[in-house]
Image (cartoon, rainbow, N blue to C red; front, side, top):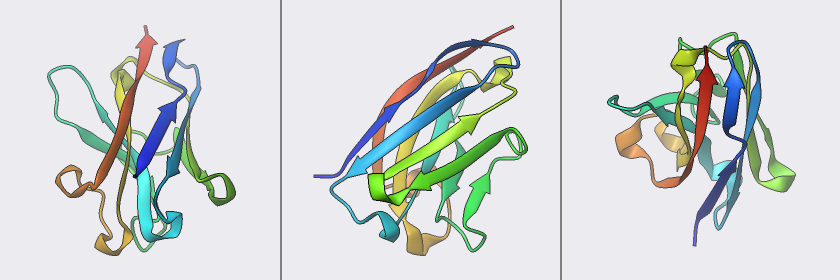
Length: 124
């Protein structure tokens, strides 16, 4: 069975940092794009960042470019999302997810497996 275990959310002040982790099992890491979506109350789920999901290797939503950084430790089957300079608008539930790497996209309807969400709250 595929499992995605996310951790690292919490409450932080504006300008602070958090690091999310997502550890996967039950699939071959290199065959999948892996990364994060987020969903704020009343809003659609949006792609934040992913690795192995396009020809450039990584993807970042415009809203997080320059502040968030995604990395992976394949030996541990773990992907990390380092989030710096956090803003109140980053407040959301963050979901780890995987998608067939051959699709070269990061699109919620195509996601094959979702992990449980982890809450990130940025106070102003």
